[in-house]
Image (cartoon, rainbow, N blue to C red; front, side, top):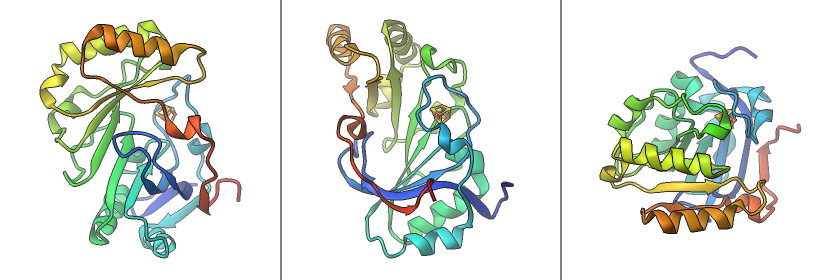
Length: 225
Ligand code: SF4
């Protein structure tokens, strides 16, 4: 399917509970956009690299209209790959008073997003194979509403992340800094707790809720369709 500035390549749309960020646990409508510019070795959404459906922004807004959830999370893949259509979607959702969060991999410029939108920005760690992908300029457009997330698979990832926080003075941004353990690595979560405590840094330990509790999302557009 071809990308265009007025249509969105969709992977899936569903209602479930937010599994990440400080919004964890909130009932949320998820719009998962297709395609990604990175190839992380630990990617758990490879199915989103290819679109299920192409929809105009108007069609997306229409299909989600019956669902009254206040929180909408735009995720991927990498949503910012579809920057033009994404901007239109955000405008439409804000006009409907939705509280929007966007999960982004940190490698593409996010300065065009309105401050009202919570940006949950990844900093890719060495075990992803994409640790050089972070666009440092993105740190200049971070607001108090935003969050930074590091997925930790081993001690090397942890040390890299702590160095990154210190060298970019991230604590001065006064935003949540989330360390999410790779739950497929046995024993890692409890090791991470110990490393965070020992560091003395105000890092939020955040296992992904949806991986701890297997929920059944209510699909509006299913990738299995
Ligand atoms: S940025 Fe996200 S969607 Fe893209 S390859 Fe990495 S984990 Fe997968």
